[in-house]
Image (tube, rainbow, N blue to C red; front, side, top):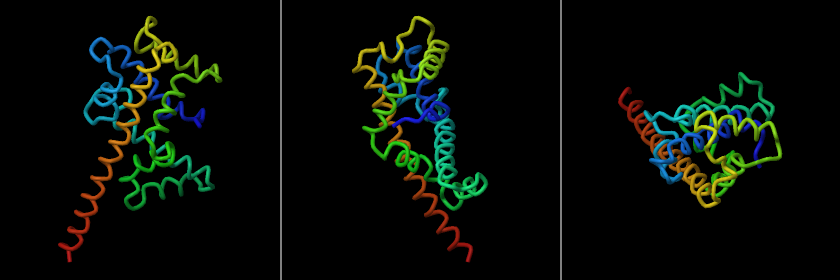
Length: 184
């Protein structure tokens, strides 16, 4: 399900977002609300801001092309060609999480609690403690329903960002069509 490489992308970002939520838990008891307010929002200070999501999506999608046999230059070119940059969040959602909120929720939970790799577990604890302090509850110590709420907030917010991208793509393509028509 998860790949160790995810830690260097969205997985690391969900870990730091969890740390921020625990740091801010006095004013945000709901992890779901925290994700709605802080995850991948333009102009909002967060360790998992909008640009981070774009970078994670691009990195994942380009690496998948390279794993599929393309050289890096071709993979980057093909990724951004045409309207590819306009569908990156939706493509990432589809290719990494099967397009499903339930899969994104489960994968976020696993990223936050997996213990089979001691290096990842130690790094996760260090990241969280570095943001929220050494007295914070690590994800595996949090009541299951509270952790699920946070992970579901991530998943639902990811789906919402992909939906916004789809709306912007339609506007972009309509404007492009109009501009081409007007230029003739």
